[in-house]
Image 1 (spheres, rainbow, N blue to C red):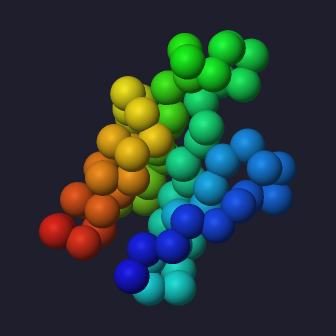
Image 2: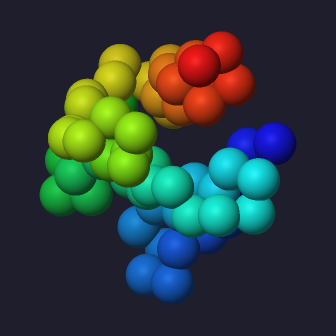
Image 3: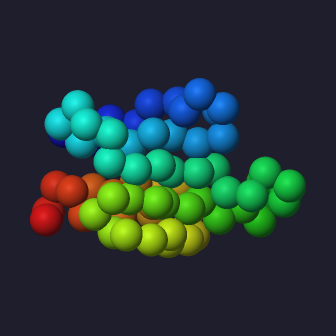
Length: 69
């Protein structure tokens, strides 16, 4: 099961898979206007940073990595 919990700085969400922290989902560059922000995932399984067009696209990417394998 995937859970997204507020991180301690409220700049994104910590990503948990089966109770273990496996990465982070940011809200994007907060200096930009909301419509220009692109969410970013940093996942242990992915070994890098990936930009997404929307929050829902980022969540779908996380689910694809961890749930569909």
